[in-house]
Length: 500
Image 1: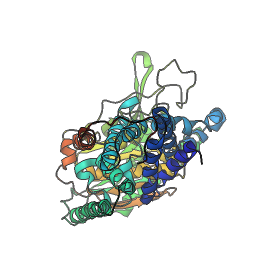
Image 2: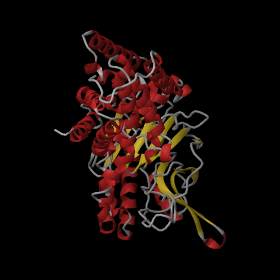
Image 3: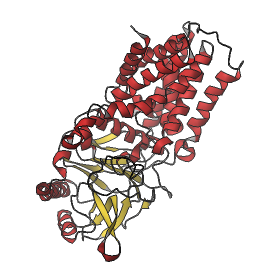
């Protein structure tokens, strides 16, 4: 098989380790295969192309679902269907090249593996910032199929889990049985730490019930004029169901997904009256909506993707405006220079000021995250520290695919990293409630309509990751790379590489 095709195939296979499949053992073939291919390449340029092919396969298989977003308006964007996922996978694939070239430059053994792992995590960290940032499908998410394997994220974050994952996946490159024994010891250590942490007493709950409302309204019909009122009434009926289903003993917060309201929920008096009427006395609605600002003369100046907090009297108690907008989905980069426009409607969304603490009277203070704002490690918690996190999203763009499950995995990791419970309401799923250790307490599956409700768990004290953020995984990655490079430096290589 041609090496480029083999590299691409190994990259495709590696994506099976990602959510929702979580076939983690495939990395024992995919990662060593990548390193062996780039080391055996006859030149640096050839090695870079092999790394790109592997990364392109990995990213293409991981984000194939973006095509579904185009199918929601296929009449206008049919020509993008075969291009969108491959095009988005190209810049993501470029981040595989630096760690692969570092591995090629280092001698065989633990130095090569350590250097590769450290450089990979540094590239992952860069991916969270460059070109507005897209830290999707970080390698550490392969462990997010349950709470126990990801407890280490409370200390080293998802990037630290990526580092450990790569070191374990590269064990076939090391001779003898001792590396395998060390790998087994590391797994046992992480499992033991996870079991110990999950066995600790639960923190005191704040005395609030939360109800997650999932309307399961397809994106294709969500904004049709004739469907707006029926869609709104659908959410009102589910809200009334939530009010009846939960105990009267505790206050209630009902959470709607991103842009669940087809009307300006905090600005349309009739929508506010109807929404308040669906709430029981003393309850709150945390609803996803569009918020508008008008200038002099009534001209529309700004649109915001927002979360509005409405009380049972129909009064707006708080607003949060999404700060980290999706390029091409909520605004057009280089406005005026790109000859196509994929943003629905004729106006870009405006960005909010960033994470803020929302403290409506009677509600435990919380931080709001709209859609993919939850995928950014160490950037989800406002100051002062909240008692919980609320993530509302419209994953209906991605249909019945891996995308919503991947998004859910990142939400679980944020709960573990920050030591905060996280309530997540998604338009078509997956809606879930996680406690402060990432244990899933409630869930509505993909493609279901309904309501789930239960008591909000308590928050833990700030975790090491919550205190230090990306500094800890950054130090680990630099140490891994520095140890590999520092002992003897980079060796001189002949024109044709030796085998690993």
